[in-house]
Image 1: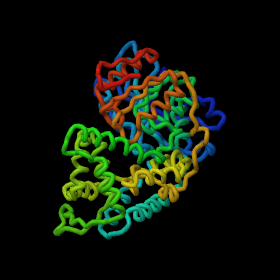
Image 2: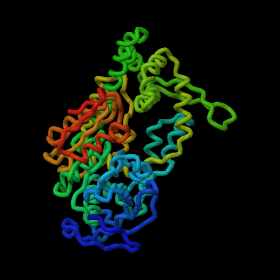
Image 3: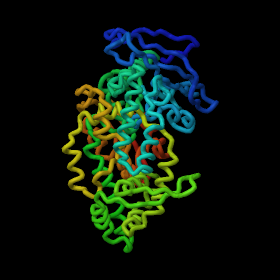
Image 4: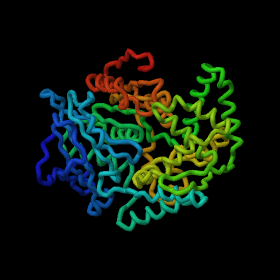
Length: 478
């Protein structure tokens, strides 16, 4: 059962694996970055653990978490623990809307910030330098990739100069962080809630510490045994094919659109086109250059937008006719107005988890059979970035699938261009007591991003071993 946090730092008993490694996880109260509705009691603190558990007396990290207590006087003692996806996304902001969800009905909710992310100490933020490098590359007519890599090298040097061990920010360490938090709060059993990358993280927690896990809720999970770079273009291509084939079937004006898309974008090759862009506040336009990659980024952005996905066939048809300008204006407005920084934590996790095990030949094969997508980075972390980020690979055991009978709820969107429903089918092979829910017309993370998904999560948490039901035709439970 969870004990209330005091105003003092609590030095809690050693956990079994902590004893072997010679450190004591600590809980240190802190101010809340976010709070739930005032009708609910919110508590906030840091988990304090070694940055590198092989050096337990070395540098410490502080990982904030938020506990929102259920108002149910008969609530269960097994809370839901959520950690964000990405990797690199903060986990804390969703507590602001948690009162509207079924998660609080019968149990407490814990939002746990992964090491290196926005509110953790240290935060591996690469500030706005990378965004500025992209802007300067366009203004100077230089290689975007080259200028981004130069800035990433500077960010790495800055973080390393602060004594940060970039190889200590990975799925293995985050797995132990969650177990340390569970033990420090004296929780006997957890329901783990993960999205995208953190779906794989939560699976690894189950793999390493199965005795403390009641259930898993995984929304569009990316399992650790999948190297997504080997499939990214193929995943994107599947969604495009679905959209274009539907459009061809439903509208005579789009006959042959898929083949015309393939032919046109293949022929673009490495060609560059001029575009006179008027930056906000500038006295006169500046000459920029764009090509296939920028056009594909526009299409990809629309495909990942809940409302924009319906416009993808129209956008592609317009681009084939040479009507690029309206979309370029919006694209460059976003690029020149974006002052957000990249996440060094994302680089560390992605490079140690995925790229360290990805096969460059398989990655390249995608471009050979889909030349119309060649040169497009679906993901903002790719081989050359990891070559300069230089972090150690995670344990090979983490990359292997494993079997478990712990009940799991697996959500997927049929129009998700990153974590395809196929991944849930693969997970189900190893977690036979899992239930798959396919939202045929939705994109990424449909369980957490829909009213119907919330109801299904509530059903599952109440009775994880019972068959989930849905009355919606577009939601398939199997």
